[in-house]
Image (cartoon, rainbow, N blue to C red; front, side, top):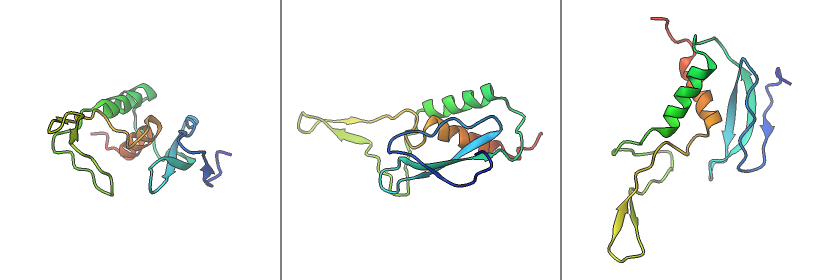
Length: 121
């Protein structure tokens, strides 16, 4: 199965399983809702010199990062910084932390992708 480059389908709103050691996960998303529809495990191209604990730390920090005030997503993603409340004329500022654009599994795949071919110096 690990050599299989074919996509594996998932039921809606389910994260793919953790990849085996030495592999990363690539995903396809639903174009309208953004949930993962398919995944596959691909072998890592080159070790980054970072261990699993270091990568997990980076993933957790990424997912917990407070988005900047000038956060302006593209690609059809909508973000309303100001939200109306039940009281007429009263609004509150939304201050999202982290992102729901990626799951932890996907963020790890992104971090591993960023580290591929990282120069030693």
